[in-house]
Length: 453
View 1 (tube, helix red, strand yellow):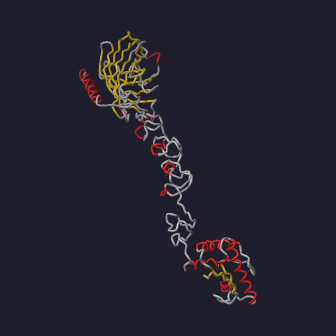
View 2: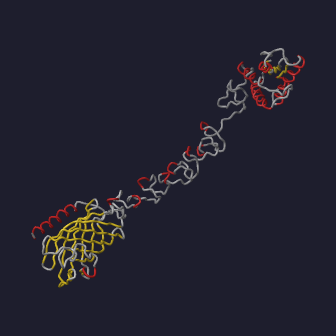
View 3: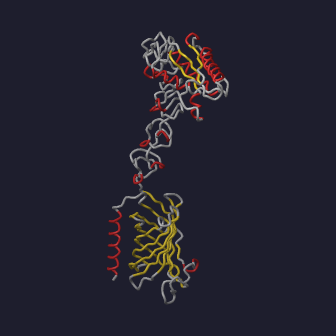
């Protein structure tokens, strides 16, 4: 029986260590040193032993201590919360329950597989665990294999150093070795994590294991210290802004320096960060007239219109003589039928105060539009004809139409049209273009017309 128990324990340790060697986790190793207490009292039914857990916390009467370092352990992390621990303990048995003993020597070698609940409770500080394993215990010259059940708690002060408290029940295979409890308390030190680049981030968690970096970036560097890791930084050697993927914007114009054609002068995104003082869409650095708006085709300078006829010199066939757009900048002797139609569309919308020859305010823009057309044809002469509806006497209507025609003529002369080019005539009600029996018809008959002379 004795040989069988020893074979069982050796096989258990061999299998466990062979599995452990295949693992590679941060700080996979731990060493523990401390003290232990052995309680031979509450683990049986017969005197001087007691019931299980009977006076479990009777430290003074039932615990056996050795006043020195009496426990040492080595642990190896396996995976998924499992750890293998091999421990050696020594003690001195001076009491068994209420009975005294003759300072018997106590030695224990134990192997335990523990399961940590730290991940389940989401804690990196408090680590409760349960364990099961086996070992071999000697009291003086008597030794036997044991099956052990363990409950414990690690409290980590730092990532590597912690306090370990553990209580184990040891059930002996042989009747001549008492079943008992063993309690340990000590300091645990974790180590063995690989950190190739020495940046404090273990290779297992280091996305850049060969280059020193920051924990915030999983071990990857941020050379310019702008808070953006180099792999995501378009300007890794120059501190910049997150909105520009780590590149600076020196002039603060919203265009990153690496894309800014004028990085020290605030400008427009549409012009790659360069300014455009005259707002013509040509960057100042390319604008030959930076203070005067002009098209890009003319290097930012405005096209000239030497004769002021509205036709630019580049398109004007008579650049030094005012003309018309329709005639490519050259003057026309007489307006076309289309131009005359336009003139009369304007003229018929001229509004006068009721029974008077004074203009309503809204007609002034219409007169200005007519004046612009008259200026385009400086050699053409025109009749300004006034017409009325049939309301009132023939004589009074004729006089009113003459006054209104002259009012239009006088306004045009006052605004730059040669008086010799314009002749005013009044026809009263004699030339209706619509029925005078309806209000709409009478409105159409009250009009001004323009004709070539």
